[in-house]
Amino acid sequence: MTSYLVSLLGGALIGLSSAILLMLNGRIAGVSGIVGRAVQGIDIRTNAAFVAGLLLGPVVYFTAFRHWPAVTVTASLPLVMLAGLLVGFGSRMGSGCTSGHGVMGLARLSPRSIVAVVTFLASGIAAVALLRGAVL
Image (cartoon, rainbow, N blue to C red; front, side):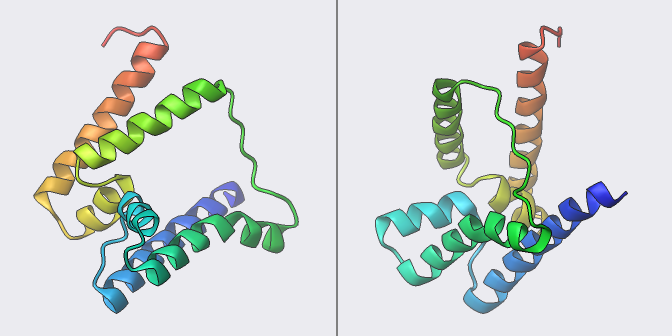
């Protein structure tokens, strides 16, 4: 059970930070939108602070547990880059990403977010099934 506690704590912190951003700034915590606005120079202090918090997460983890979080990437760098571009394209096309739709949208019972999350999940299931050679 202790192996799930770090994930549980991480999920709780994501929810808490999303709620705080909404309460204090009236903004939805959609990471793709926040990063996009930071790159465009829009509301740079708030958006850059949020991105910095994301990047400092592993450092906080290391400080608390004295080892880096385990991350294993078995895909090639070109495949990872292509996947990143497709995710970016999809988040623009869907007017939001999994954090905006999945965390904030579902909590607000947004019909658009419910459709988006079902689409994300179905696409992920289909991709895994195709890559593993299963028949849908």
